[in-house]
Length: 159
Image 1 (tube, one colour):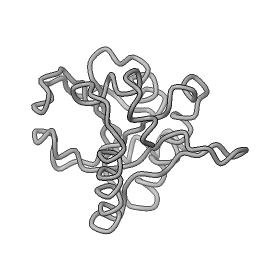
Image 2 (cartoon, rainbow, N blue to C red):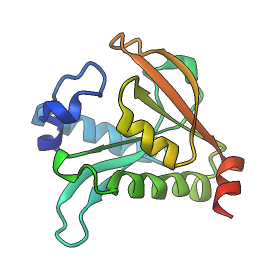
Image 3 (cartoon, helix red, strand yellow):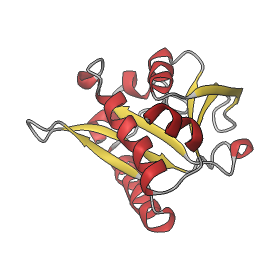
Image 4 (cartoon, one colour):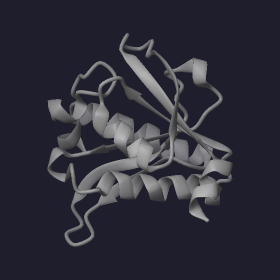
């Protein structure tokens, strides 16, 4: 994961675009692991079945960095560049949406992306999400777009 977080192209759309070193990555993973205990959900490692290689992550978290959308649960993903364009993020995110609604009983899942990150918006659309607002991320001053999917919308599209 440290290699993924150290790639400027991967991190381009994450907060202010800064890369993260190995220690920052370790600290982040500790936070993610504690969310499983406190929230009952968190981030999943995305691995390549044939090789066991770590491609990145997808999962659920509370977007505390954007208080205006709270209470909310956000789906997010981050994959290493060598895994882009293969459908992995969409496949993993769809499994995460299913987990959130079917296993955790969530009523709504949002996703937040910086304006201009068309690849992430395409994934959100494939998941059945719809844009609900545009605002500014107060941690970095960049414009973001919020997408949402309700459990009712999810159930309608999966039946």
